[in-house]
Length: 85
Image (cartoon, rainbow, N blue to C red; front, side, top):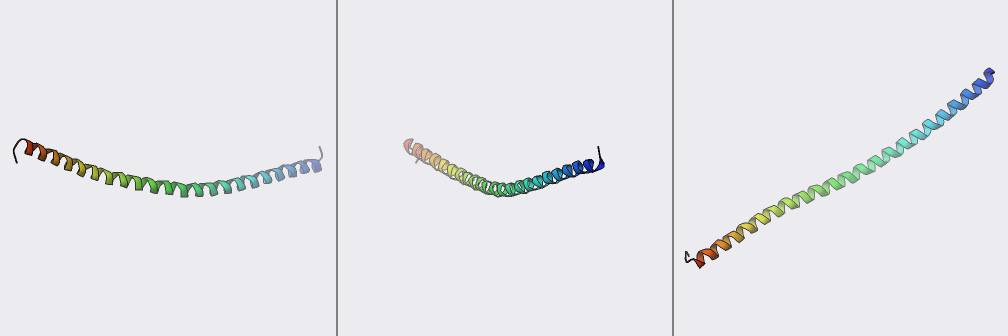
């Protein structure tokens, strides 16, 4: 095998490697873009989850107050029925 042919093969391999590296770089750039887009979506979903959690906490307080009002009404009706009031 002549040195000229070996050098030509080496040049072809190097060119192929450079091409592959260029493709890898473009793929990594696309992956970074996708990750940034997903990060924004995750933040939006996280904000929604926090809002739902706050709504549930507010609903728990209302439910407790309604339960206390129902119990007071029931006890008032029982007191009236038994002649305590």
